[in-house]
Length: 489
Length: 92
Image (cartoon, rainbow over all chains, first blue to last red; front, side, top):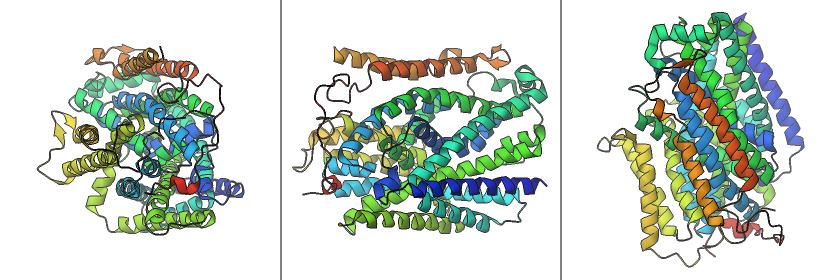
């Protein structure tokens, strides 16, 4: 019975998504700019929710409540600072400037924007390669997550390889058909769905246990230290490192960064910017508090299992729990499809076009983009079957890896003195440092409580500035294009 | 003038970030209406941030980025979009 309901809801969702994709397909121009950026036409609601759903979905439903259950609800504060404040500020500082530049010079990717300014296709390729190194394993993790969830849901009736394979095939079909416009539309649906179900779930559980006072009293009896701010796990250094590194990392994640180019107007960017902290508080507080309260509510959480499904199974009817779990799986897919699209665009525009085939017609690039999606998704799926430990580690560290790009890019955006050698050295050195901290035992992962991700950002900052100061710009660099004549409409 | 305004907004951004986590409540476990006080601070602070961001968007949007203040509608921007080949990022 439960299984039928759950599968029914998942299949229903997929059908709905595909329907939306088909509508989007009918509205599409056959150009790469339309496929990747929906021709830069997003309104406030769509831009806000597509960024939100792309970014936060799987974590909000599963990993976040798990952490709140085991370590206490302080994650809410870390997420609030990272997404509600830091990312919102970057939304203006990086996003608005990128949007203006993208509109003026037709940029579709970050690498393209930097390559044009520094007159270097090697820099353009470097940014794409660095991004794909972190993105590929992250996509793989999503596939693994969805495949494992499907296997658990069906008690092994759908084995991992089949489940993950089916989901990959569906995502390929969906992305290739729908492009950015379709993805953003389903994200909007999903974002709204996530908000509503999370609130209903929290209110439902609280109504059953007798209100927040009773739930907190139960938590106090079980783990009183969770209510006090701070702990051995939540140290000041750790909270700040995590919030800063992930906040900056988010802005450089290809599928988020690319959305900076996709806004329809300045007004859309302004409204999304002001609404961002509210959206964060509305989603994170119920989701994380559910996880935290579950600790005191005698919920049987399986070893290594997820807290939220266990809470829902305990306190809400089967159909509602199934709805939330199906939503969570769909949310995982919504993150992955955006990543596939962005990964494909980085590959075709910044690697294939500049290095393999220079003269590509718009029509052909549109086709290449779709082929890129198929190749990227299939490769990630195939590699996931080999269970590669190194790639899993890379995927887990992806946010910090992307964060290493942020400061060199920001310096280039705001300081005319940045040189090609400077930004290249900054990107290479911080990546090298951060990768070493992951894989070379001699390089520590923490420095007095501060994470290697944060220290690496500092390395990138210093190297970019110092190398820029001691080198002269190459003759072909277009030093003023990020500054002169930049204005909206 | 514009420069002072810019530094003012940078200060606002730093303060918003610095107090998003209520460090002065470190170790505090006071409960209000069944929820920790520090969580109420979080909710209030995010609300405040949203208002501040809205004010910024109304009054100062474009500061530090646009070449001219966005309020002046003086000269319309010409067609500066480069042709596709110019956006290539290649050496000429």
